[in-house]
Image (cartoon, rainbow, N blue to C red; front, side, top):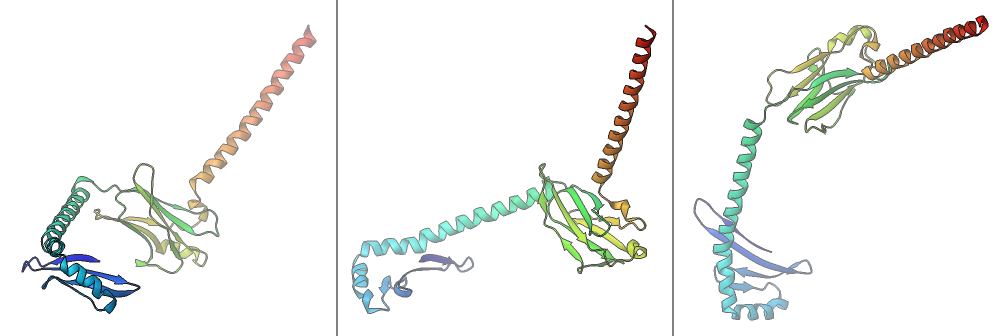
Length: 236
């Protein structure tokens, strides 16, 4: 293991290089004396061999005191510049996109889902509140997911099995998006629970009704057509 530490204020550089064997320290470099330190007698032979190679020792010192600090400062500068550019891009080049928020419920006994989709960025929060106080019990918060167009969606479920119908109006779903001051607030409607059954159910029901009407109309049409044809044959 090797590396270096550079103090920006004092300019002091501390380099280190050490090796281990079988889970214990084997040999390490003392950069001040430019010699190797062997805490175990098994490393004495290695220490003598490495100390005698003065050319290699000079290269080690140059790397730990010159090359390593310069490389580290360059890498840190690049990372810092990248973070600044990323922050500027995120804060100034992209405007927040507000979502559409709706309430869904599969059945009268299932939780009410507050669903938001189409928002950007993904720094958003959505909670259920009762009388303005955030709820934690009976609330199941889902993860933020990515849509195909690069926007995001999320949902939060509220268990309403123990909520009295007359208390529904006290509940609110609140969506908060980073960069937008105004929250989106959806009131839990009172009265008939069917008011918040998913739209897909209504669509399916409408399709079924239209299909039934079409079948009835077709039967009536065929019946009338058949009667006219029979009458025509009878007259001839």
